[in-house]
Length: 372
Image (cartoon, rainbow, N blue to C red; front, side):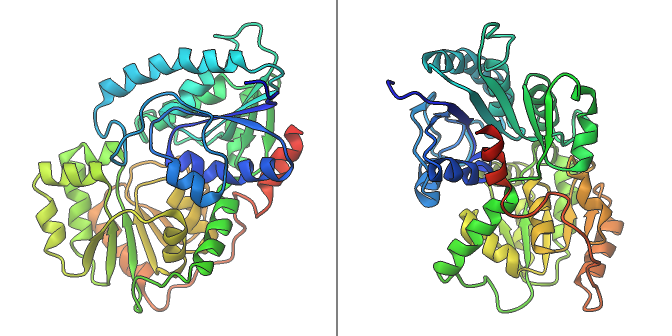
């Protein structure tokens, strides 16, 4: 480890890498070396190759073979993260001349990275630790869980906060005199742009020649609750247009456990497919007519490509999109959600003009410029 790394990047999940790779590419473009610490929460090898970013310098735990290391085993996840704190601290202490430690989003890796790189564990540290995608809040500790808590921890223990929007900046107002708060936008706009160009280069074809719906359900508070998952299945079972359900391992496991998978399979309009790689996913999203989801990033990508989005949750930290006329927070209310699906699917429905609250392309370059 003789190379003087100025930047360390700590990532654990595929979502984190997808939103951080434009920053990594910008660092590589400017020949700024970075030390990549991978916690092992997800497998990232294929994504590193796909996006042409440096592979991890170290992987702190064995990568899982399935889509998630823990699926629904929360206790195992907690102990794993506690052990990570000291592993990350030890790696950072090996790096001489380090100026910045970057981590992204709202995962367990994010919160752990913030802890491990903070003054709490490193009282004499000379670097600054940086939270990318700071300030998003649902104002409900259990929606989403544990992501809302992870964001609060990350923002609390970071020195620099890159806020994704004006709303996020307001959420961070109590830190204005204690930390550097920079309203920059969300790197997902760069990620989606690069991925879309990759899909075009690969000559990706739409899933259907007709109007179609993309479905993604994986939130823990949804899939671990039989009543909530049952309401979601009732909504999906009514779909009348070609629909593609990108099925995660943990979602399938819970649908089977609660005897709900059959209701999905009985709808001839729904086809269950494996999760798509990011470039193909972005291309299909750009071609679909409706998104039904419970994830956060899809809400952002809905804004980028101006696609109507049904959010099957009770609260969202991406509240910015709710000011448009094409994102609907369902609160899992079946009648209201079905009415909104019908409205969004109507040939008369038009998206009203808006400015993307998460910014425009090129903000990853601005992030690196600030750090430089």
